[in-house]
Length: 427
Image (cartoon, rainbow, N blue to C red):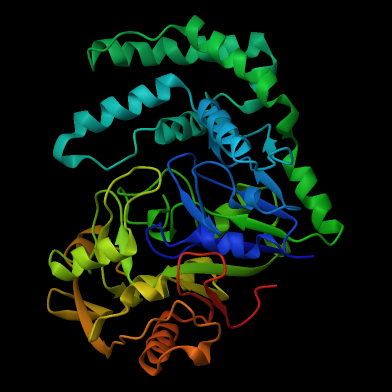
């Protein structure tokens, strides 16, 4: 059975949790393949709202096995806190699997993340300060600590001491901060070992065997395409690959086993953190989108920057991810506008540009070229089929589909699990 990839097609916060949850009852495994607790998903089940930061959304679906893949960086304190919170609400977390090859976030990663961001001043990137970037940097520098190291005290101690030999020099001599005790870090992290031991396994083997047994595996990305460290708006990006290629390296599933690549699109555009954002609104429309859409980061608590739909970045996401389908979320938020602008191209130095410019300088200076579509005033939250949507809402969806380059197979018309119109099955 082929695997599916589900990822953000904008700057993250598109509603991936809702999309994953929708598929959760039909898939056997849901895998987080990159990122850490800098991402967040909100899933509404009945009258219950769940905010997930590190755990895959599939943990809320009975019968589904949630997996934290090797491409994720794990803060064990956050992991255990999140598990405890779900268990207190009656959620079964016993099926969770964690890759022994996933890297760990430590206190010194968090400290370095925060002081480095402050040191950058006006040039700051807008990180969450949770140690994600420094943990990935250690991974690439081959001095990282992996989950499996928790079970060998000698290796754990050697790695922590080696890492802090250099990092304490930086903290003390450059940032005028106190040195971090290697012994305290080792003691704390050894305490996590027995608490997570039963979850840890060779997830790459488990997932490939599952596919051999005709199980359905859903690979769930955090953040979004424009935050990809290779394909995003660098340097205002995350430290991993949320794009479809990252699903393979972050899970150990080969590309030939993936049959569908599903992009999540919000019916407008949002962004958290610094960086270019051509359609950003600084007027009443921006405030209205933020208020109606509840645009506040699940993990960061920061207000999201809001703007109109950007078809240029949607086309880009289709291209770099090989998208086969889109899931359009939050269409209901646009109810009430008489007219809705959509960015169809950019103007850069007086020239019309219809594809995302590769140059950072060009993208910073891009001005949106808008086409205006008629809006609607009818409540769409109770619509169960595409034909039940108002005429102008249907026309808006069709226009976005044509501009974006892949079929829209599902539409979110409200925050609830059941407030979704499914046009074509993803399975």
